Length: 266
Length: 298
Image (cartoon, rainbow over all chains, first blue to last red; front, top):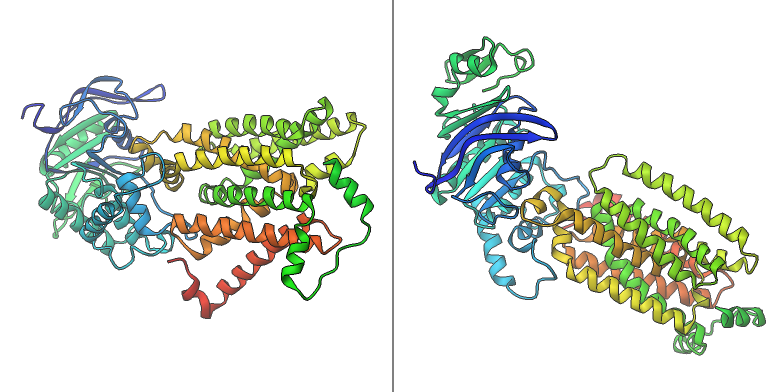
C-alpha cells in the first residue's frame, strides 16, 4: 500500500518520553477503515504512540504520517478518547453539552448561531452510540458504560476519519465491554472510520479486529492477530519464552510473563 | 471612603423599617453611599457569579481563596505607599494568579505550594499594616469588606475591572469550558489548555480584586464559590448554571445590602449568611430521599 492511501504510515519510527526512548524501529501501515487493537504491557508506550499521532509529541526519529501528512495538534480528522476518562458523581455537565463540545468546543467566544446544525450533529452521534435515553442527564450521574458511550459520541461528533481510543474497555464489565465493542465495530463497518484501540485483553476484540499492534520491550510488531499473538512472535518481542494458549472457545491467554501472568492478556 | 465613614460616625441611629416596602426601598437609595454600594455590588455579583461556575467546574476554589489572601499583601503594601489599595490588589492577584495558572492543573503539589505562598504573603500583609500608622479601618475593610465606604471613583474602577473580566470570559467561553471539562480532550482538539489556565487565573484575579471590595479577602468564597456551587446542584446545563449563579450572587448582594441598611451589623455578615443558609437549605432538601429525583441535575 502506498503512503497516500494509508490512514497511518510509519517507517523507522521511534518514540521518546522525557529522556527515555520508549520504543524504536516501528514500521506501520494501517489501512483506512481498518480496526487495530494496540496491545502490550503497562508503560510499554502505547499511549505515547497516540501522543505522536495527535501531534502532541514529536517523533524521536523516523517518519510518521496520518492521512499522508505529518501529525498536527487539533487535527479535526482525529477523534480521541483519553485513558481513564471517567467523571466524578458531582460533575455537573449534561451529556448533550459534553458531546456538543466536540463540535465547537475549540472555537473562541460564545456560540452565536449554528445551534440547529450543531443539535443535528449531536443527535446523530448520540444515535450511533444509542445513548438517547440518558443524554440529557448530568454525565457524572451516569454509569461507566454510559459515560464511555458519551465519550465515544463526543469523539464521533466531529466526523473523524481516525479514532484513537485509549483503554475504553478497562473500567467496564464483560457485558458492557461487549456492547461497546459492537458499537465500535459497527462504526468501522458503516462509516469507514479507522480505529486504533488500546486494550489489555484482546479477547472481546478478536471477532472484529483486522490488525494487532503489539508494543513491548522497546519494540513493535504489527499484523493479523493470528500472525502476532503466537508463542514464537511474542517470545521474539520479549526475548523470553512466552506461551500463547487457546481455549475451546477460541479465547487467547498469554503466559510466561511474571507481571502479566495473573490475568488473561493478549 | 472618607465620606461614608463620616456619615457612619454622625448617624448613631439605625434607620427604622416601615410597613411600606416601596418607601423602605426608596429610603435606601436616598444616600449616595448606598447607591454606590448597590452599583458596585451589582457589578461584582455578576462577575463573581459567572466566573464562579468555572472555579467550581475546574476545582480551583482553593486557588480563588488563595488569590484573595495574596492580594491582601498587595493591598496593604499599596496603602503603605499611599496608593489606592485596589491597584496593589490587582498587581498581586494577577501576578500570583498567572503563576498558579502556569503551574498547570496536573501538578499534584499545587495546593501545598499555593498554601505556602499565601501564608507568607499574609505575613507580609501584617508587616505592611504595622508599617502604616494610619487608619486600622483600611486593614479591616480589606479583610472583611467595606462596600458601604466605596466612592464613586472606586465604583468606576470596579466597573472597568469587571467589564474586562466579563469580556475575557466571553471571549474564551467555549475553549475554557472544554478544557475545564477535560484537559486531554480539549488539547487533542487543539485547545491551548496551558495558556487558557494562565488566562483563566488572570481573569479570576480581576474578579477576586473586585469581590474583595464587597466581602473582603476572608469572605471571598461567599460571592465566587457558593452561588456557583448551588447553581450546579440545580442544572447541568452550563449556560443555565452560569445564569443561576449570577442571579444568586445578585440576590445575596442586594438583600444583604438592604438588610444591613436597616441593621447595625455589617453587610459582609448578611451576604455570607444568605449564601451559606441557601447552600445549606439546598443540600438538606436534596439529601431528603423523596426529593432526590426531582432535584437531581437534568
